[in-house]
Amino acid sequence: MSSPVELQQAPEGTDYFAIPKGMWLPVKIDGQLSARIGCPKCGESPSLFDHTIGADGTVTPSAVCPVKGCDFHEFVKLVGWKVIEW
Image (cartoon, rainbow, N blue to C red; front, side, top):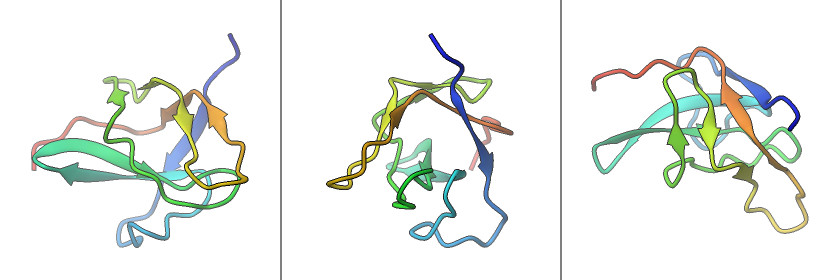
């Protein structure tokens, strides 16, 4: 298995629906900590709500971009991920 694609945390104040390609932001959905990513290929900002994010930022299962025509489907790691209390 190849190494996961590493995504960097987006700067504070980044719009949750306009996350730069290859970056991520923490989000809280229905009381659960999760993340949204900027697809490294097309820039769409899908949620990882239905994924598990490990303490080291490793995401399972693999991330799949929901945009028709985008073929991004990779294992990803959220660099700098920390489990936080909101």
